[in-house]
Image 1: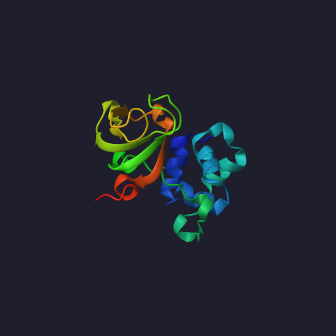
Image 2: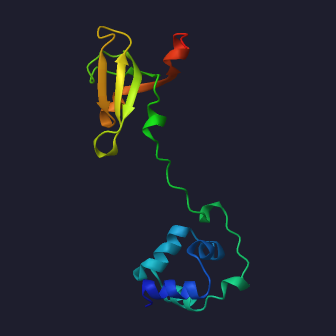
Image 3: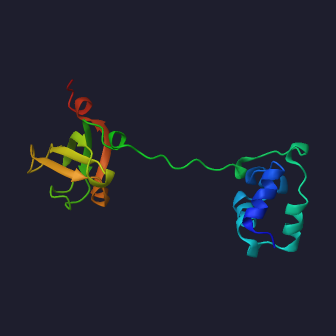
Length: 157
Protein backbone atom coordinates (compact mmCIF):
# COMPACT_ATOMS: atom_id res chain seq x y z
CA UNK A 1 0.00 0.00 0.00
CA UNK A 2 1.15 3.49 -0.85
CA UNK A 3 1.62 5.85 2.05
CA UNK A 4 -0.26 9.18 1.90
CA UNK A 5 3.00 11.05 1.24
CA UNK A 6 3.74 8.70 -1.67
CA UNK A 7 0.31 9.27 -3.21
CA UNK A 8 0.74 13.04 -2.81
CA UNK A 9 4.17 12.83 -4.44
CA UNK A 10 2.69 10.86 -7.38
CA UNK A 11 -0.06 13.44 -7.82
CA UNK A 12 2.39 16.32 -7.66
CA UNK A 13 4.83 14.70 -10.09
CA UNK A 14 2.04 14.27 -12.65
CA UNK A 15 0.52 17.72 -12.07
CA UNK A 16 -2.71 16.62 -10.39
CA UNK A 17 -4.61 18.40 -7.62
CA UNK A 18 -7.15 16.50 -5.57
CA UNK A 19 -9.91 18.73 -6.99
CA UNK A 20 -8.91 17.95 -10.60
CA UNK A 21 -8.62 14.25 -9.78
CA UNK A 22 -12.08 14.23 -8.17
CA UNK A 23 -13.53 15.83 -11.30
CA UNK A 24 -11.64 13.44 -13.62
CA UNK A 25 -12.74 10.36 -11.69
CA UNK A 26 -16.23 11.85 -11.09
CA UNK A 27 -15.93 11.46 -7.33
CA UNK A 28 -16.59 13.81 -4.45
CA UNK A 29 -13.55 15.77 -3.29
CA UNK A 30 -14.01 14.40 0.24
CA UNK A 31 -13.80 10.83 -1.06
CA UNK A 32 -10.66 11.56 -3.10
CA UNK A 33 -9.15 13.21 -0.04
CA UNK A 34 -9.89 10.04 1.96
CA UNK A 35 -8.34 7.88 -0.78
CA UNK A 36 -5.19 9.99 -0.67
CA UNK A 37 -4.86 10.27 3.11
CA UNK A 38 -6.32 6.99 4.42
CA UNK A 39 -4.71 3.87 2.90
CA UNK A 40 -7.26 1.67 4.68
CA UNK A 41 -10.00 3.16 2.46
CA UNK A 42 -8.22 2.20 -0.78
CA UNK A 43 -8.57 -1.02 -2.74
CA UNK A 44 -5.95 -2.43 -5.10
CA UNK A 45 -7.84 -0.73 -7.92
CA UNK A 46 -7.18 2.66 -6.30
CA UNK A 47 -3.51 1.82 -5.78
CA UNK A 48 -3.17 0.92 -9.45
CA UNK A 49 -5.11 4.00 -10.51
CA UNK A 50 -2.78 6.31 -8.55
CA UNK A 51 0.29 4.63 -10.02
CA UNK A 52 -1.07 4.74 -13.57
CA UNK A 53 -2.35 8.33 -13.64
CA UNK A 54 -1.58 10.08 -16.91
CA UNK A 55 0.13 13.45 -16.93
CA UNK A 56 -2.47 16.06 -15.99
CA UNK A 57 -1.56 18.28 -18.95
CA UNK A 58 -2.68 15.47 -21.31
CA UNK A 59 -6.17 15.18 -19.82
CA UNK A 60 -9.11 17.55 -20.22
CA UNK A 61 -10.90 17.94 -16.90
CA UNK A 62 -14.18 19.76 -16.29
CA UNK A 63 -14.57 20.81 -12.67
CA UNK A 64 -18.17 21.34 -11.59
CA UNK A 65 -19.62 22.81 -8.41
CA UNK A 66 -19.35 19.69 -6.28
CA UNK A 67 -15.60 19.52 -6.90
CA UNK A 68 -14.90 23.07 -5.78
CA UNK A 69 -13.98 23.80 -2.21
CA UNK A 70 -16.45 25.96 -0.38
CA UNK A 71 -15.15 29.25 0.98
CA UNK A 72 -14.84 29.41 4.75
CA UNK A 73 -17.81 30.97 6.53
CA UNK A 74 -17.72 34.74 6.86
CA UNK A 75 -16.32 35.95 10.12
CA UNK A 76 -18.35 38.93 11.23
CA UNK A 77 -16.62 41.88 12.86
CA UNK A 78 -18.02 43.54 15.96
CA UNK A 79 -18.85 46.65 13.95
CA UNK A 80 -20.89 44.56 11.52
CA UNK A 81 -22.75 42.77 14.33
CA UNK A 82 -23.26 45.79 16.58
CA UNK A 83 -23.18 49.05 14.59
CA UNK A 84 -23.40 52.12 16.78
CA UNK A 85 -26.97 53.42 16.74
CA UNK A 86 -28.54 49.99 16.00
CA UNK A 87 -31.57 49.05 18.07
CA UNK A 88 -31.89 45.61 19.63
CA UNK A 89 -34.83 44.20 21.57
CA UNK A 90 -34.65 41.79 24.52
CA UNK A 91 -36.31 38.41 23.92
CA UNK A 92 -36.49 37.54 27.60
CA UNK A 93 -35.42 39.03 30.93
CA UNK A 94 -32.16 37.09 31.32
CA UNK A 95 -30.03 40.23 30.75
CA UNK A 96 -31.85 42.27 33.39
CA UNK A 97 -34.34 44.46 31.56
CA UNK A 98 -37.76 42.92 30.97
CA UNK A 99 -38.70 41.17 27.73
CA UNK A 100 -39.40 43.57 24.86
CA UNK A 101 -37.04 46.30 26.09
CA UNK A 102 -35.32 48.27 23.33
CA UNK A 103 -31.58 48.83 23.58
CA UNK A 104 -29.40 51.11 21.44
CA UNK A 105 -25.73 50.34 20.75
CA UNK A 106 -23.78 53.41 21.88
CA UNK A 107 -20.23 52.03 21.93
CA UNK A 108 -18.18 49.04 20.91
CA UNK A 109 -14.71 48.19 22.11
CA UNK A 110 -12.41 45.18 22.13
CA UNK A 111 -13.10 42.84 25.01
CA UNK A 112 -11.38 39.83 26.51
CA UNK A 113 -10.56 36.90 24.21
CA UNK A 114 -11.19 39.03 21.09
CA UNK A 115 -14.89 39.23 21.90
CA UNK A 116 -16.38 42.71 21.50
CA UNK A 117 -17.64 44.56 24.53
CA UNK A 118 -20.91 46.27 23.57
CA UNK A 119 -22.36 49.24 25.47
CA UNK A 120 -26.12 49.71 25.17
CA UNK A 121 -28.41 52.52 26.30
CA UNK A 122 -31.80 51.23 27.46
CA UNK A 123 -34.47 53.07 25.45
CA UNK A 124 -37.72 51.69 26.88
CA UNK A 125 -39.12 50.11 30.02
CA UNK A 126 -38.44 50.62 33.72
CA UNK A 127 -34.68 50.97 33.23
CA UNK A 128 -34.97 53.58 30.43
CA UNK A 129 -31.80 55.67 30.24
CA UNK A 130 -29.61 53.13 32.05
CA UNK A 131 -26.43 51.76 30.48
CA UNK A 132 -25.84 48.04 29.95
CA UNK A 133 -22.43 46.65 28.99
CA UNK A 134 -22.24 43.12 27.59
CA UNK A 135 -19.45 40.95 26.21
CA UNK A 136 -20.39 39.21 22.96
CA UNK A 137 -21.22 35.59 23.69
CA UNK A 138 -24.10 33.17 24.29
CA UNK A 139 -25.95 35.65 26.48
CA UNK A 140 -26.42 37.85 23.38
CA UNK A 141 -28.85 35.17 22.13
CA UNK A 142 -31.34 36.98 24.39
CA UNK A 143 -31.26 39.94 21.98
CA UNK A 144 -32.76 40.40 18.54
CA UNK A 145 -31.47 42.94 16.02
CA UNK A 146 -34.41 45.04 14.82
CA UNK A 147 -32.49 46.09 11.71
CA UNK A 148 -33.26 49.71 12.57
CA UNK A 149 -31.06 52.56 13.69
CA UNK A 150 -32.16 55.02 16.35
CA UNK A 151 -31.79 58.00 14.03
CA UNK A 152 -34.19 56.49 11.50
CA UNK A 153 -36.68 55.15 14.02
CA UNK A 154 -36.96 58.33 16.06
CA UNK A 155 -36.44 60.76 13.16
CA UNK A 156 -33.18 62.14 14.49
CA UNK A 157 -30.01 63.18 12.70
